[in-house]
Image (tube, rainbow, N blue to C red; front, side):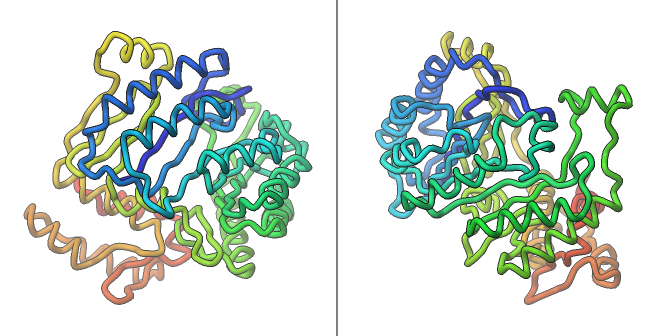
Length: 374
């Protein structure tokens, strides 16, 4: 099984982020206590009690103290069996990653870091309202490596205001030079409820045109493949097979449990998502009321999820599996669509799997939606 813990706190709001979080850091202790209670309530959600991956996301999990992290991990160890060699990831901001804090994480059992660098341009970091400098990013990665924590992923955002291809090239080359084994590269998306979203409404900020985003995307793939990274998912690149095992579990439709406000869970038959409001989440758990919504998945839902997640990966779509799934619910298999994808060189067929090419990855979401079952 796979376990996700959502830590909903940040020092400040980044101007692009629409994930669920709060800047009221005084509530960290009460939130951890509520998550301990949810771990107990949800202990029967999955029949498998052996954990292969744990992922602390957010928000900013690196804002938790040693004591708070130990509380969570003591409860996890009491409730489940953590498999030998389990991947245990913590998302962190560079300014938090002192050598002392990283050594604390190692003692607790965390063996992988996902560091939100975003860019190595200090002016762009200020525009994003990040709380660190490019120098702090470099020092954070070196601190981790110096104390022996070398399974590191870094996040990079491209398509930022005023960024040209040369800026993106610099960011990627800087990330590669740090000798990390995983890089996630995401295009800047302007969401309505963010500061950037409000600036866009007022005409103060424009989104990077699609053709320019495509050029950045293609450059990133070229640079990282040249540097020995495999594009195993549209936005994720790994060296020496160091995939994110936790994120791969989502793409491969394995069951997982999500703890904390806004966290999602999946057990093959259903999907559920927690209240995305700290106060309401805390109150529901305190009063013993339901703290999540639940959706039972129809066969059509399950097929659509398989298409949406797997098409973005290096593994692609299992054609025989899809044929059987479509036949079982008496739906027409998208033969013509797949033929068009191959003719336009958006996808190739390899050993019974349909895998997107680099040009196909540019329009992965559209291709998925074209064959969704409504």
